[in-house]
Structure formats: C-alpha cells, structure tokens
Length: 348
Image (cartoon, rainbow, N blue to C red; front, side):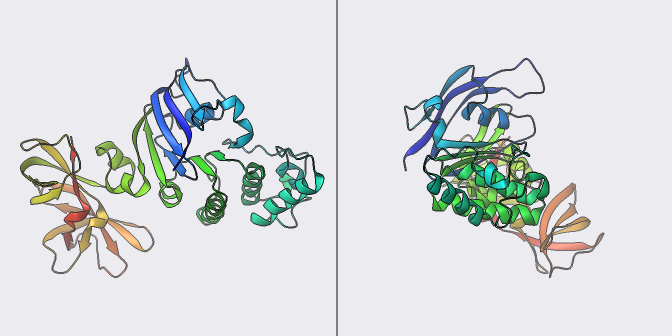
C-alpha cells in the first residue's frame, strides 16, 4: 500500500515544562490507514499532530506527503480537528459545515454539505446554531465540517473526549465507516484505549516524546514491546523468573507460580536471563478443575466479565478474568487454568 505521510527524525523542544517534547520521532502512515496515538498525558501526542497539521513548527526533521510534498502544499488535502470545539456560534450548522469548502459551483457546494448532514444524522438541524445543539450533535457537526472537503488525511485530537460511552461508540462507528468507504487516512489522538483498539488499523504508543511501539492494534495488546507497554495497554500479571532451556520461539521459565514453557518474541532474551512472564487476566480461565488456586481479594465488575484479584501464596495480587456464570466470592478460593499460548516472555 502506498505511503501517504512520512515523518522523519522529528524533534521539538519547549521552554515550558508543561508541554511535552518530541525526540527523533519517525514513522509512516499508509493510504486508507487509521492510526490511533496513545500514551500518558503530557507525553507529546498533541504536539506531534499539531506539527503534522502545521499548527506548530518542528525544530528538526521532515514531514512529507506522497514522499515529496511539503505540508504547505498539502493543506487542501487534509483536515485537522483540535481538542477544543471550533464551531462558530454566529453561523448556522449548514454554514459551519461549509466553512472550509472551496467550491465555486453553488449547487455542488450545497450538495456536498447536504451529503454530510445526511451522513451524520443532522437533518432538521441545518438552520440551528451550535448553542442549540447537544454535545453529541456538536461533535457530529465537527466531523461533518472536517470531512465535507473529502480530505485524503484526517487528523483528530481527542475527538470523543466529552462524549458518554454509548454516544462515543455510535459516532466512532459512523466515522470509521466513512473513512473506509472514502479511503481517507486518519491520525487520531485518544486517551481511551477502548477507542484505540476498536477502530484502528495500527496503534502508536508514545512515552517521553518517543515511540515505544507502532504495530497493528491487536499486536500492541497481545505482543507488547516491553513491560511498560504491557502495563499501559491493559491489566496484566508480570511474573519474574529465570529463563531456562530454549526451544523454537519458546523458553522454560520458573516463577512463583510454576515452571512454564512460554512463547518468546523478544529477541533480547537468552537462557539464564531473568525475565517477565506476561499473563493477561483473560488468559486465566476459571474452572472447578483448574490447576491453580487463589483466594479472592477483590472483584471489579466490567459488565459481561469481572476482573478478580487473587492472593496465591506469596503473590498478593494475581488478576484473572471471570464470566457472569463463574461463582467468585470475596475471601473464598477459586481455581483456574492458564492458556500458555496467550502468554509470552518480556525483558526486564
């Protein structure tokens, strides 16, 4: 697939400690690819997309579109939606949507705006003003305003931050469908991991102004680059122990729980090393005949499943996942098995 955006050795530093710096950052965005940018607050996510959008200048490095087009010559081909709502309260919804639409033919212009009104379910709202709309409706107008020009690249900075979960999922699904249908690439900054994993082709994990991992969305969760990424992307058990005999893409490891033969994708690990065994809660299956047993210390209800914290010997907090049909009670024992195929070794 053709590369749409190429960022090379990007660097940006600030005098203000509250604004994150970017250090020697490089990546490529393909055509018709949706990439979510995640990371802790203040790690450079907004700084990065503002540089790509031309809102702030980089100190060093290059940002190229189609391999050789500079950002100044590409401006008509992308839309940038900042964190703050950018609607003009003195204009109607119809007028707001057409803000950046350059179309001399009035009939074509009117049709393009009406098309976005239909796509985002804003019928009968076109002559209203932003102050008359709900937060969800305003977000739809922002998306319509950004997409009415049919850009090749859409840059969104926390687009769903102020929406409740149900509304966020609804608008997110509408947006992704349009992006795929119209072959629009997207860079989306988000703090919401559920959003990132559910709508992205790839995820970029930022920390301290650099890329910790840039991989397909599923791989970021199932094969995190290191222990920090594993912790950041979801609940995890990291069992430290000595690595023993090596097999093809597997090592033996002994930890406080047991001795396991574990998949290993980390090329830095060798026999004799001290390493982590990564066990996600969902890799632990509650079963009456389970091999392992722990006392329930805490239950976190997550709707269809629960995250259960167990005390197992000297292990004070071991997390497993339980379904609605599993009987788990505080201070009672529960048995479980571990799907080793869902685990892996990580460097310490």
